Image 1 (cartoon, rainbow, N blue to C red):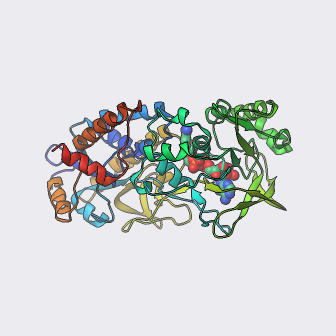
Image 2 (image 1 turned 90 degrees about the vertical axis):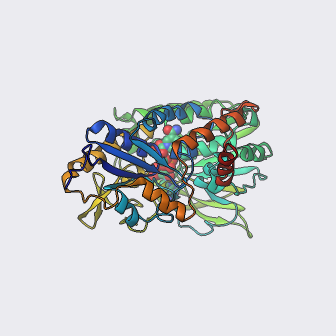
Image 3 (image 1 turned 60 degrees about the vertical axis):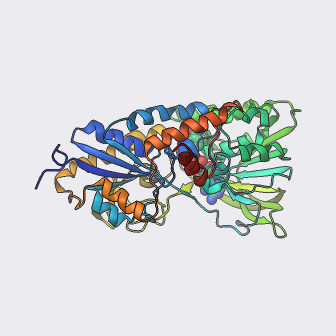
Length: 460
Ligand code: NAP
C-alpha cells in the first residue's frame, strides 16, 4: 500500500471548524513536512469562528489576526468547505471515509447554566445570544433584546462579561464606526439602559477579566464606573494572592478598581457598577424578568484556590434584562465521544478517547479539546500539540477508502448543500467591506446565510 504523507498519497485531513484553532492546525500540518491536503469545514459560509462572531466590534485590532489566516488559506494545500454542517450534511462516519484523519476544532458553542429558578424567564439571556446578535452571527439575527428598562445585569466577570457590559454601556457614537451589526446598532440607539451591573461571585482579586478590559470601563464616553470601597476590602487569603509575584494582572485589576472607587460620583449619565461576592439565587418576575435575587458570598479555601460560599444573606435587585456570562461548553456531535461534565471531546493531548482507549483517526484542538480558556494565541501551541500527535500516528492511521474531495462535494451537492469555498468567502468579504464604506464602518456583515448566498449568486 502507498505510504500516507507522500506525493503519491498525500495525507488528507478534515478540520471541522474554521476558527483560530482550525487555521493553526492547518498551518502546523503544512509546516510539519509530510505531503498533506487540509480541508477546513465550517457550518457557516464565513470563516474565522469567534474572531468574526465573538470578538467585540469595538476591538477591531484583534481581528487583524485574520490576515495570518488568509496567508494560511492561500497555501495550495488548503481548501475551505463553508456552509457544510458536519453531523447534519455529512456524518462523521462519512467524513472518515473521505479523510485519513478528522481534527475537530469546533469550539464551545453553548453556554453553561446557572441552574437557578427563573433562569429562562423572558428577559434573561445568555451572553452567547447577545454577542452573536451584535456581531451579526446568522444564528442570532432574529433575537430581540428589550432594552427599555433602566437596569441591566451581567452575571460573571470574565472577558465575555466585559464585552457584553461594555457594549451595553457605550453610546451609538462609540459604536457606529465599528463592524457592529446594523440591527444591533439600531436597537442600542433606542436603549434606555442607564445602569449596568457586573456581578461576580468571588472578590476583586479573583475576577477573571484582564486589565485592558477593566481599564476601558474607566474611559467610556457617557458612563461612570462605580466601585464601593468596602467591596475592595480583602480577606487574608486574597491579600496573599494579591502579593503573589505571579499574579501581575490581578494586581493591575485591583489598582484600576481602586482608582475607580476613589472617583467622585460621576455625572456622565450612565453608571457601570462592579459588584463582588454576590451570586444570583433566583430570577423573578410576573411572566418576565423583574428582579434578580442575589446572595452575599464569603470566600473559603486557601490562597489561589478560594471558592464562593453563600452566606444566606440575600437581597433583590430590580432589573429589566440580565445576561448570564459564566462560560461556554462544547456540544456533542454524533459519532464522537463527549465528556458531559466538562463539555469537551475527551482526549489525551488532542487524541480523542473513548473511555481510556484512543479512537483512531479522530483528534481535537482548541476549546473543544481543553475547554473555553485562553486568548486567541493560546490556540496555536494547542493545535501544534494535536498535530504532533496526529503525525506520530501517521504510520498507524487507517487510510481513507475514498481520498477524493470532488466525490465529497458531489455527495453534498446531491443533498442540496452548496459548498462555499475560500474564493467565495473573499467575494463576500469584499462585498461586506463595500457595504460598510458608506457608513464609515470597516464592514457591514451579511446577517443571514441566505443573504450571503444571494450575494454570491448575484455576482455570478
Ligand atoms: P471565563 O473567563 O472563564 O469567566 C467566567 C466567569 O463566570 C467567571 O467570573 C466565573 O467566576 C463566572 N462563573 C462561572 N460559573 C458561575 C456561577 N455558577 N455563578 C456565577 N458566576 C460564575 O469565561 P468567559 O468570560 O466566557 O471567557 C472565555 C475565554 O475567552 C476566556 O479565556 C477569556 O479571557 C477569553 N476572552 C478574551 C477576550 C479578550 O481577550 N478581550 C474577550 C472575550 C473572551 P469564577 O472565577 O468564580 O469561576
